[in-house]
Image (cartoon, rainbow, N blue to C red; front, side, top):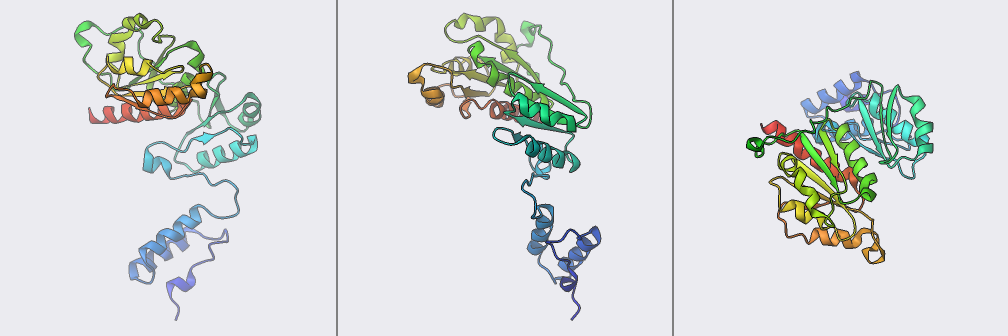
Length: 287
């Protein structure tokens, strides 16, 4: 019997074509192959064996943004290979790589037409097109009558101290990669809480805040009690011995009694920025 399934090419080879995929679809429509089998074949073709790196080319469709590469402990060749696969996959025009040191950066960027490296945040953005720069919001404070009006594309990143800036820069570059307007306010920790007062109107007009702090992490609770938007708290490893490399800060933020505060992992500027960006994009879509 000459069935469509007998004509299916060997998936371990590289000879599978669009014509073969059409045969699989016909077989599924005629009942000679289940739809689950069709999905398995297509996924196997998309993530074929023989490669050490298998980037997720479908992530932008599912999640709104493409895969981000964690660069720490990866070779420059691996970073370049994964980024090239993502760009050539046709679903993203720019790739974000986090935790990239200077030596990795120098070896990776020659293979791409455009790049942007943030030394402090250790982030690298790669593209075959000009890197887009999100228009930053005006530093002018909103007028008092507009304080309650949200500018839904805006995320504010705050740090308790200047020592938290590397984590903040990672969050800022993540937001810019997402195309979300972001503004950084640094060194407004609870050792001098009056420093927040000059920024209250701006904070209350944001879609989301990323609050980055070490030590006891109290800034997230203070800010959470002053604003009507979600606060993404990022604990940092900044602190003396009893801080336990950020564990004390993490537990303090998790125990916050401010209802609008949620917490990500220690030093996870990328995660804080990404979650805040999703909130900003979602609130903009609903307007």
